[in-house]
Structure formats: structure tokens, C-alpha cells
Length: 211
Image 1 (cartoon, rainbow, N blue to C red):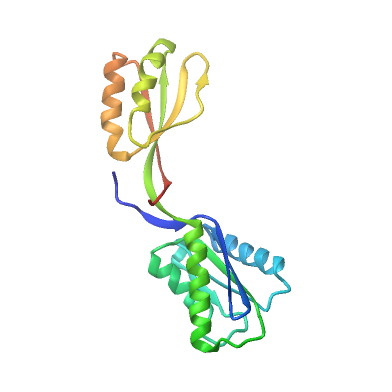
Image 2 (cartoon, rainbow, N blue to C red; image 1 turned 60 degrees about the vertical axis):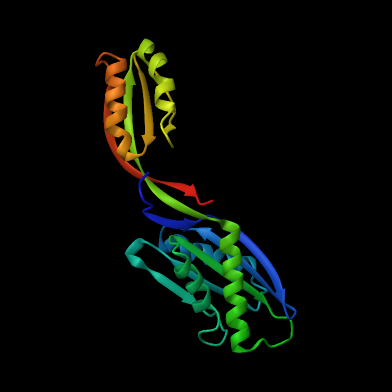
């Protein structure tokens, strides 16, 4: 199996209380700064009555990293949240840590710990996914050949068989590890006496959750 191209978080939420202050960490998978900003705006609007809505996000797009302390003392909120993301190796994700002040000051060190812990818990709830390359193929068969080769295709590790189109022939999109392309193509040609049509479409990334 190919090495991961990058890792990213899914969506997750976690909440805890520290000295009567309520911290809510919300994590979301995003793929652009537009999506990240929209997510931050959504959570900030949802918790508009909160004392702070601190955020951080990391994107593959132009290697963007952003954070905001949202009124907390400089360096005590957004940066600790961002460091949780960067140290975990994730990208294409955003986290918003919402704080409802409970009346007891935490101090600079306490804030750093609380915001980092909230971001880490949200990341844990979301899970980390390895984004692995998958080759996209478009295959065409006669009806008789498709009945023969369908079980063979589905045996490949991590293969994804898309929606089958039944017309004059059977056409089906297939995704699998790039290193399996030659083996699959050879097998299909052998099983169909060369009648199979296998077209390489390109590559995308498939999310596989880490254990």
C-alpha cells in the first residue's frame, strides 16, 4: 500500500469544564480557506453568546495556517490550538474552541493548557484519516464477461466499485491502489480474451481512518 499523502481530521466535538469555564471544541474537515472561514463563522454564530470563539486551521491550499485568540491574551488560545493540529500532522481541517467564562481566571498557563486540551479532544473525537492515492479506472465489458470478472475485481485490497451502467455493454468505474493497475488490467484481459476495455481516468485521494 502506498504511503499516506497527508492526514486530515474528520468532524468531531468535545466539551469539558475547567474552573467553571466551559470549553467546547468543534473540529471540521475543510479543503479551502473559504470553507474554513465559513465554518468559523457558523460556529461563532451558533455560540454568539460565548465569551470567546477561538479558531485555528491548517490547509494544503498554499500551505495556509491561521489562528485567532478572539480576545484572549495573545498567544494563550489560538496558537496552542494550532500547535495541536501541526504536531498531530493533520491538514485540511479547522477547529473552533468556544469558551463560556465561569468567573474564575485561569491565568496564561491555564488558558494555554485548556485551549490545547479542547482542540486535542475535538481532534480525538474526529479521528485522523490517512489520505491515500487511488487510481480511477473506467472499465467496459460484455455482459458475459462482467459476470466472470466482477468477483475478481472485488478481491483487490481497498477496491471501490462504482455504479454499474447496463447498456449495450457493462460500464463500471473502479478505484484501487495505483500499484494494482497493471495486475488488474492483465487479469481482466486474460479473463476476457482481450475484450475488456480499461481506461485510466486519473487519481484522487481516499480517506482511511487510522486505527
